[in-house]
Length: 413
Image 1 (tube, helix red, strand yellow):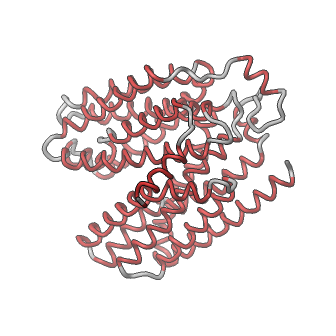
Image 2 (cartoon, rainbow, N blue to C red; image 1 turned 180 degrees about the vertical axis):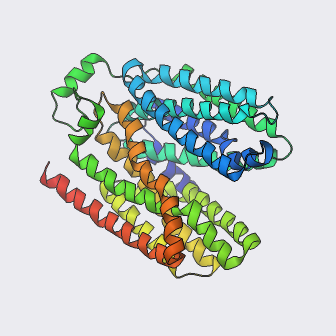
């Protein structure tokens, strides 16, 4: 009886959303579940293609620049030619890049095709995000973004596990699986979703309303600067991204130092599994608990969970405490992921949604991109323990900053 009530409660939170949001959630599950290639890309490039670690690193650097360019181009085109059309075209080209890789053996052409696929997938992402903003409003965006976030993580929980079984003996199926998942997602999108690009009439009508989503007759950067609250929000979000980037870089190093190479890598796997389990189990509950709290305040709470979850790692040596830390910072991740997108959507001009969804991830991604480089130099000079103290201070400052931002909004409303 209790289990059925809990299930009913979860369903109620996500009920009443536009039908197209449910379709987009399924599309994201399928895409994430079929994301076989990228979790094992480093191993594939070094073991199958034979690239050195240095060359593999160069590949990832080139890929990052290409994806950034793709995102900017896709965002610009999305606001002019339509969301659905651009998404279908770019994702279709990505599928065409993945398919040949299944038949090229260990050819050097595979990395080149994967870089190209990354360009097209990045170009398609602003269209996907803009559709979500178009299809929702300030009243239902929390539920919509939470459902889509949950869908992505459900897919990512299954996809890499399947890819793990295929990687050693059935590498060809990894590329084919990626291709098939994209095709299925495109079929669903083409059949069930109409294009959501705002009409000229809607854009003109929005200008008559003094609202954070009103259209802007200017370029994307000026439109962003005309929204000081959003610009300030991105400062705090960038700090959070910087702190959160420690997960894949610093934690495995620390666990290897404490528990040894073999046990440390296994324990890190459990830590990452904890992250996924907490997301799947807790996202709906956390959404229900914080539904009536303003998005910026929820992100301030997320920063506090980061501060405690990462800060405590400067003082722990036991595996259970690493797991407890993972639970805390994952709660922070849920709060931020389900609220930051809502805040950005609520402050995006109706005619700049594609471009905002292209530019903003690049701005906040600076913290995530430069984090490992800075952490490595910091660890060499001061050690891992002091790094976690620095992360605590930064996350705590971000929390205070976000709370102040809410006061700033009220004052300048």
